[in-house]
Image (tube, rainbow over all chains, first blue to last red; front, side):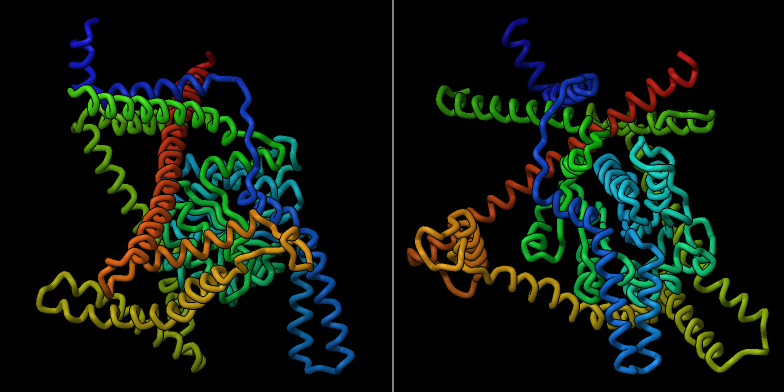
Length: 323
Length: 240
């Protein structure tokens, strides 16, 4: 093929050629069986360690409430005060290994990035005996997807934990319109906010929900989102107003805008797109789909870097030698 | 997830064909791409409306009203207050529909004013606390960090010191760059603004890098679906 013909084809079809190469490289990488090494970043460890610490945190919470109750009784405090602390203690004891709330705030369009992340977090909680409350606060379209993620984790334990049951080990509440008000109300009473779970069962009739009423009864909150603006609402309400501890998982495209909240310790950790999911899987000791896809990511990035280098060489060559 | 039933198989094939239709845009704009785009937008809006009705409107308004009417007239004052409040909310909601009439469109200002008032009232204190106070607090860091109790050269944690200093310098330079009240002609202003621009470029560069990663992740996910669920899944379904 002459250089002129190549140039003509390249000029007319360079977009198609680049996309075809990218497609080919990712397809090739999906058959690649080699291993890659990933360092688990501090951002990811921030979420991982917080989930890991939930059972211990719950034990401390129970101890603190017991002491508070004893003190109140010794001081002959009012019956309302005693009843309030006693109710908190009863709820805390109901799930002695702790509870995390996972908000699946994404729709299928970014599922490729966020589903592996959500699965890794939920599997981690199940593996440590932590109960999971799932909601889809920001996305009505994502609500069925979130249900399938929870069910998949519960029914395919991969030898990490026994099969988990809906209503016993986890509940899924789905979506309610108007995220801001929903989150506000959840700080006062989740039962009044949701009334029923995603399957239509009344929360009042579910033994699981006797241990979860407000953010206070949740030891850690993981928000996995593909929408800009959603983390801000969670931080304002759950963290600033109700002092809940939050970790975030986000699409890589929006991650850099949220790093300042990590610096200010308003969130404990940040999972950055597919890489964050892969790091979480490695920290869990259970490499899965995210790690596999990171291989394809590596190949594709190498191709992108190659084209950037070639493009720059061409640019400087044209400047020096002319067209 | 590989198809297990015939309906699963149809779903996987539908998703695969629609994915290929979207990819066809990479060659050039065409009718299949536009058709898929229309299906996506229509489907999303349709699902959104249906779910909002069944998750919000129906359980929060219709069902309680049905119960309220069924137990008439044995209601407490509290129930009547609740019913009046819900009716008022319903009326405010219905006023949004007045946007469809040019003459009556002004009525939609009432629910709009209510929403903006509530939103602002609840949002401003929390917003200031979350985005201004907390962030400012996180910027007020010591410029020199010592490892131990003693204030000595040998005790300086250079990495933390460099990090904190660059954080404070970066915030001040970027803020200075966006300060347009006077012309920045002197050497100090120009140097500070340039450093601010450099910090911004670093931020944009990091964002761009993450954007490439995000887009390739989505492409990887789709190719994974086409390979695993569609091709291999179909072969497995037919026992190959």
